[in-house]
Length: 195
Image 1 (tube, helix red, strand yellow):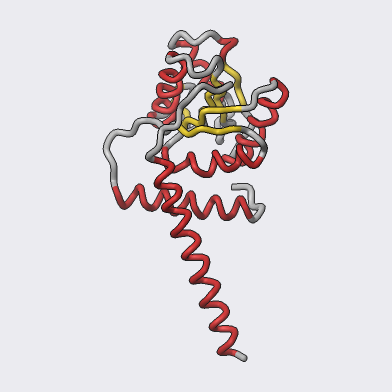
Image 2 (cartoon, one colour; image 1 turned 90 degrees about the vertical axis):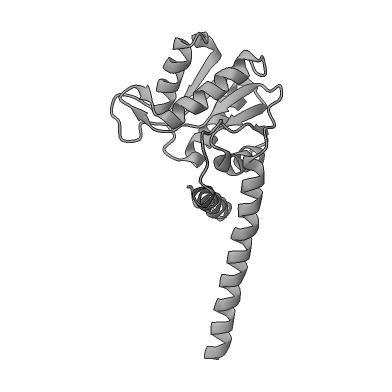
């Protein structure tokens, strides 16, 4: 009996490791693909902001979204992200201010500023899109993040196309670890854990 339990546990762990490995490969492949094409909105996933200024990661995402907007791929940009511990600013509103300072008309920027996680931001963004009659989005984030966000959007009926921000330099081990974390995050989301 104890041997059967140990074998069952070992098989479960092996199956989970295999699933994470397979998903990590999918995450990595998606992170290398730019699928930008005409869509209803460019959806920029939030990242840290520093007292009203975008962090380098958020700035790079916003700059990439601005480039897509200027190419005419979508008439609107949606910035996402809540307060993240800040009491005055949200990632979403900082994103809007940054884009406005770069010449994007304020009416072209939609703000989702309540999400405290990828799941919350994505869910709220979809609610906003539905109210506005928008059915497709170009997802702008770090490459490793796009697979999971696309799956979340697609599960809610949104056509999603990934367009990773441009990154300077690359650390293979760090990139692989990010792929694994996103694979685990995806599995947790599929299991109903809002990460």
